[in-house]
Length: 248
Image (cartoon, rainbow, N blue to C red; front, side, top):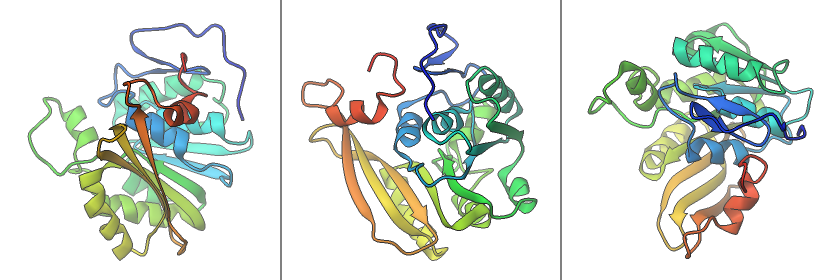
């Protein structure tokens, strides 16, 4: 579970400093952002016995779930991009949970072909968009677009690796989720929990956090505004993220 905050943690420009760990992300296409932090703070971990982070990037989600889960829980993080996976390994090595997290520099499709269904929780902040206007670097294109990892392939891999009673958690833009959910349902997934996130109170939701299950369950729907009417962080957002943000 939680370690005491490390007083040696200092603010650095090449990454993001949390209360208990630091994430360097200067060699990663996708930087630490609110989407990932929300997903890592929200994802249910109480029943987790073994966790898989698909498309781990800097290792953010693996580290957040290590902080939140029981000390015996082992976490595997899979990242295709070599620069990002190397940085994730460094972030893990310098964290309090180096003995619990293993980073694999591998394609998740190949990874799934050589593993059995042993994970009780799978988490992913996946590529959002179909191929479109190039981002300017192949590394960032790979992280943002579904060219190399389609949502169909992601769902299939999660199905292969998840135990029957397990959960698969993702964060998506609202418009993307409208297509992702029916796609998942066609593959016999069921939405177990759904959190609609808006930037501010009274604004429409722009992100959806999903917890999917292979077993049919009643869906729990909720919502969260990041900021209140005064543009300050909302009470709900602070409550969810207070164990991670330094100044929360």
